[in-house]
Length: 341
Image (cartoon, rainbow, N blue to C red; front, side):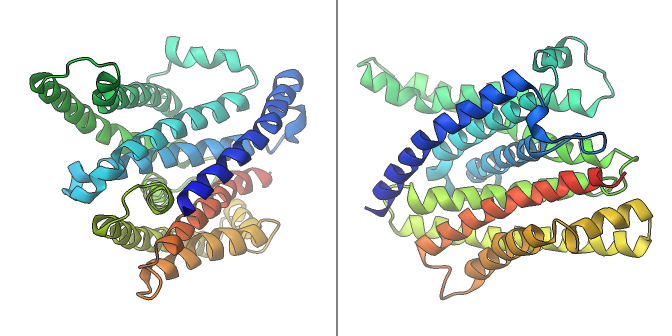
């Protein structure tokens, strides 16, 4: 009943949001970047932050979709279809946001027809494209038995075995691609020596960790409120996700702490100024309240306390809070470096 009510509420929210979204899209296409409040220093904004958000969400979702293959954790196989759909939707969302950020959106084709072999961006564009196509192929194979049954067509055991073999091969192919593009997004920022705030050698690893955090958060939401047949195996899935979320949150917090402490201790003026924008400056309130407290501390407490981590609804809430906090995480990744001339 709770899941049914939540689904109805989300449909209502989506219907109400569509006109607002279409109006925003019209403003972007009609007025270009006039509404973004960009300047000569701040040339990236919310679109780039949300691009990072969705691409890491896609990576994390897919890695949890294949947890059965990676770690032999059989209960996660029940999450496969939902996680696949979530990953594909996230890829589309991420590419749409970065497309909107382009001054000339039609020029995205240049990344395909005249790429630079040494460009991290070109590598990411091609990896996203191939991964999206492979995701679509996996969805076709995964849902093929249902379609064949509805159409009344024969789907013999030999064809089933062949399709399952192809599907497993595509899963194996996708895992290194997911790791590559989630780490590659971090490399896209980490290689920029002119921005000390971004120029961090561990950024590719840190972005991979945050992809796992966001993926765990999304899977908790889906498992808590949308996964049918909430039996004992469902409890095993929820507890497994809670444990993984706690581990990945701890790793994310450790990186964030060490990155900022080393940056401040290093004393490089541009880097110190950007870090202070986050911890004591204009981004301090969203950083401490939303990113750290709501998006990390509360979910971690729910995930580790025995009295809380067996409550399905609370774990779903923890996953949702992670997703909310992750939005601010990516905003505080992109903007502070640009606000320092």
